[in-house]
Length: 365
Image (cartoon, rainbow, N blue to C red):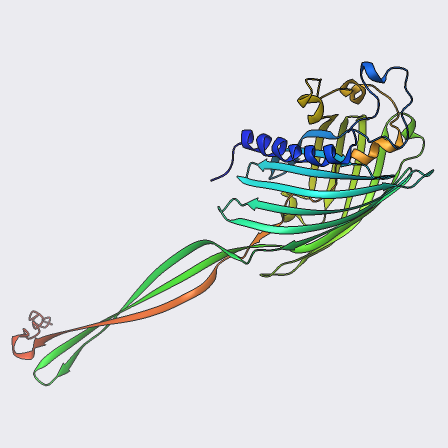
């Protein structure tokens, strides 16, 4: 049974709460100086950035979905930031995805360069009521002008039965009547064919990569990047999925982001084109535990401004729209044919002789 959206929200917030023990033992606050106690203080470049919580929607020709995403930094050793990342998504094909990840981002001292790696556990309740598990691994380079990402997806589940279809067909042949001694024999033969077909669903192992750049000039008004990339997914049933993809990312405001993406294979995302719109704000469950506003600083997400580069340490981890699965189509697993023969006989003596045609006298003349 698919989980409702309320469960999605509860799971996400619950997973964020796992960061509390790590932050407490590390002795590091999630935020730099903020609130009343932060007035008049200078924020050090080494202070942790806040986490983010994101609500978004994805729309394509044959697939629409809503998701809740979080990035929660919980340890800040030196110039590195270690964070938890979660995503829960439900789409109108009745597919439910949950992703739980651990990531590290390193801000190169004195440079606008972030190096990052991440690892995810992905769980999928598919539209055919099958559950799949997989591992994901990613790497990223974020700079002022150029970004690059690579993601790999490794299934941990075998192919699962998605449905069974049975077909029955029959044909009848009549032979005779044939005289056999004093009887006439008529033979009726009926052949019945019973076939069983099964459909399997499988998780696609594969990878995708992209690289892009910030559009010069336009960045003074709106942070906009254009990306190009390539993907390859191994299809265990038919030809592999591989090809090019492209993406345009625009920050209308620091916390209001839109994406338009094109993939060569329409099957993977419900169409060639996908549009994504999401709202991202700072969120601190530690503030909530202390009785403070967990969305402290959220107004900065909706004020036109240029973001500081270090704010990108809490950017949403960019991965595929969906955990990829594919259906096999009909695979014949059983083909049985049965034959039934029935013979009827009639005695020749009981067969009435043919009736002669009526007599017609010849014409006179």
